[in-house]
Length: 305
Length: 279
Image 1 (tube, each protein chain N blue to C red):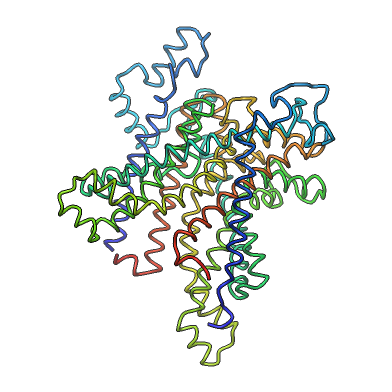
Image 2: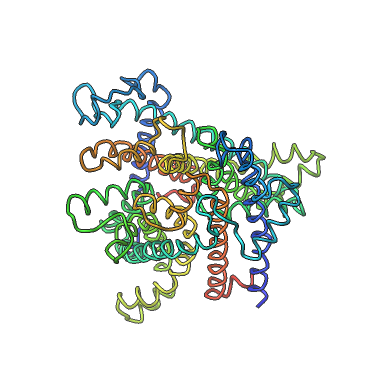
């Protein structure tokens, strides 16, 4: 129990640090943030109003304390251009990003793991080489290059799949492949490495010498143990997936958090920018916490160390 | 176990050759861009817009009529600038922090490593996106934004290595002989932990080049009009159907360069660590 408790406590200073860093973002703008938001020609009245609304007219320590209080009570501020609460805007876009990420994870599990398994069983032979090539290319292939290629092939030339919108499952296919390929490549590599190692263990030889069929040994005895490091990789990759989602959403006009963040940056809507960044980072910290806890639950050795 | 033999070393040598070829094929045009580019990369000639490859413009011309080959070559220079400076800043800062944290221990270590944890709470590109959004576009700001996160990986790596080395006999002996802390860190610990740092640098160059291209693709990287590969891809996607060549060349270039530095990292790791080397 102490492991779980300690791990949860551990995240508190990190969350505090994230909050602090996001607060200071607006103070990194060179010059006057109000000028950046309204433009040089803005009326003095409007500038003073915005400055007061953002609290920029008060001492920085005061701003910081009120920001912490506000944010911790769930108030992320108000969007400058849309005049709606930032929290509501984010809540509206969040499901699309979650859907895209789940789609990508599904793609990577369905392609990466079987490929890695196949490579390990046929170690050094051609299926292994094909899998290695996929692993190397999949990691080097930027998603903002894969996405347009997929659109060109499957949407423009073959006219099989729709793009630019969210709606049916068919709309999810290309974005999910775009986002999931790099993770699939990594998963196939990890599954292969982990399986090759496990297949060399004594208990596999024992199982084989008991006369069990090769398929039973691989699927029942080996795969189960090979999965532990694979699960960690999935957890670690969530961060990569999150920033990949920002790019993928931009390619496919996917109405998620990433596009919201980019729209906010382009319109210099800094409270919205801060809100998006805070929510994405918090989500990431949360996912990491869950991964660690799940890992400790699966493998008791982690809890003791 | 039979059937699970190690692959031959010939393949490792082939991978090293490929890595050398790819990185050299990137570095040469990047360094000598001004000499090699046949045209001005930012020359606008709207009458010659979107021309497919021909004898004078080997890779075709983009929407503005600029020569794609010349933009590609100058794009390599931008990639190299960002890759080199990001990794240099990240390595120096990360090694210094990691050395200090690992060697000093105690509250210094706690403080520095918590800072690393906080920065790593921002997934991948997010912190860079946030910083460029605030600082504004431009090559130097991209380097600052990418280094802000880049050093953390080196700091973690170096701290781990220092912890493994600092209680070894030869370090203890140096301490016993009265060497001061700076000398121990610089002369005795640092040279013995540089190998993994070198490997990490190679992967980090690939990462920085990819990140710069990603930022520029999103319109948050280099200044508008500069021939970054990411920006070229971003412009090309709007004419994907009628002029796929606008996107295909920069896309392939990014992929090959990232592949090259990743393979180089693997090869250096194999070369420095005999345990990894397959015979």
